Image (tube, rainbow, N blue to C red; front, side, top):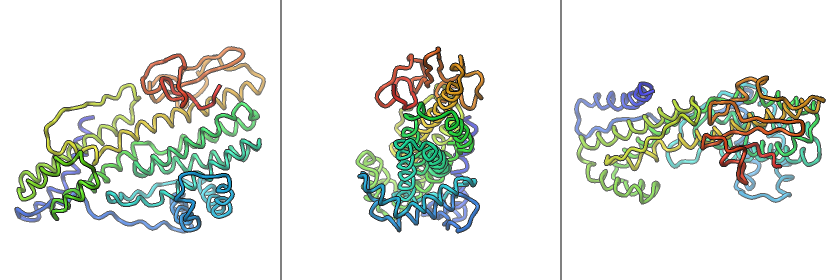
Length: 407
């Protein structure tokens, strides 16, 4: 694990060393941490679903500029959205049958992340279609839109942490809307739901992809900070990052003309960020219960900036655990209901299901399951890593994590 972390750190530092060397020892040289991000233009008619998603986001922002800015919606807004951008969402729905390869381009610090407002609106339309289908008893419509909307959301998890967080939120909203109606669906509908979501989950990008992309974003932040020192515009750093970095900013101002201390600062910051991102990437492949978070006390001047440079990776890991756990629970609930609706008793255990569905991301052990002739229960041990007998809160999150199916 440490070897992996330090390979990432070494890669981050190599560019600076190489560029600094080209200056032949110029004491005023500032290492280049990363180059200007490349541009990417989505392509019409591409077989990559990502291009359709990106073009759709642009289309939505153009056709519904007022809707994409809203944070709350009334019933009339649903009809308006369907009228303005329903055809665009239909294109996204068809594109979900294609493979999505996220064309990741790191964005500069504090600049808007492209496509976010359009993607969020597309996710809302999928959600509304699921809700409308469930309320009207048209579960075929609800399932089709839930499957497509979730695949769309999961496709976004191949981008940055911001993209992935949005994609997970889209999937979470859709699942919550669908879960409450599982018991009302027919065996055929439950079979379709279970099989469809198995495929969607199997095709979801590993969250390590988005975590790894945070290294590119971290280097852009380090470049921004160093450029601010070079131009003497440290006030902008304070404005963007807040008062907690005031002491660090004062230190940077004091060492701006001292190449040795200045380089040591940024090399330490880059190494710290790379180690954190590398550690989180490694931990993304482990159950939550085995992850250890080390809180080291340090007097290093760059410590207060590490969370601003690399602080998005770890929260993303927590969000992904919950979404994956509940998606597995959704599939298993559908399967168990289907078995019972076909005239068979609830399974006595989850042994007949594949480990890809039954393993709890929090414990690394099977999800907790129990059943008798009248009812069954499946849940995750949640973030505390222990079985609390299915006890949970109003959000179905703590101490045990459950599918939002209600009583």
